[in-house]
Image 1 (cartoon, rainbow, N blue to C red):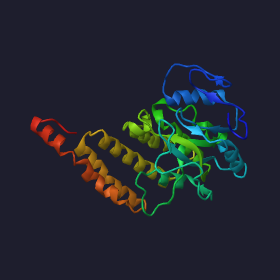
Image 2: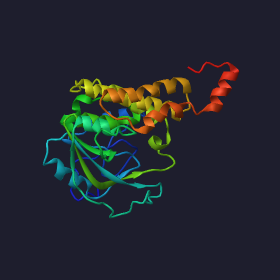
Image 3: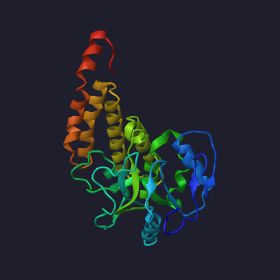
Image 4: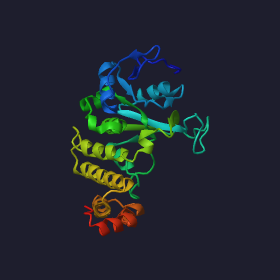
Length: 286
């Protein structure tokens, strides 16, 4: 409501809020809430905003200005990081925005940027903070309704859906991303499981027909699967075996793996205490 260019609609799935179209539904997860909000909206541009984050006043104005000059499917930008009390984190501060040279990214570029450990021969840079992205309705309408098992990966689904038509990255901080003790995606290692589901789902999207792009999505799903198992300390031997396949997949794609890709099998096996205890008890590890 503080935007310099007034919004046409605000769709908010919560309890109540003044001057907002109010929709009530039982708690069914993030994907279900977004599906309901998307169905109720009428605008050509859909802007995603999580409950604990916020926009800076000129976010909407600048987003619309950039998208009016291109046919790209959506736009991402950078964000400030703040804690639960609104204090700026990681050295960022108001007014610290740097240069604003936008980039045009392809679907393949977006996939390469999704790797936690970026392959060294892939596209460099970033596409900013995805949880405040803006997409064109026509670029993502065929995805809806989103599968509810995607859960917290809704913003990733919108990103990949929009990227099929190209993506604009504006390196300007137009929102604030809150990191705090109740932040589900940041704090919960199971969020990696949602990412794994996202990449497997994206391989079936309309327009994703290239063998190379599908192979990239397979590698991304494998990386997320391994990282989730490592974070949850599950099945170390099986996880190490899976991790050992990732560098080979990347090399087959003509990509030079990050050194951490080679270290992931070893990292999976560093849970020696759990492994020894399981062997002593005769427990099957995988």
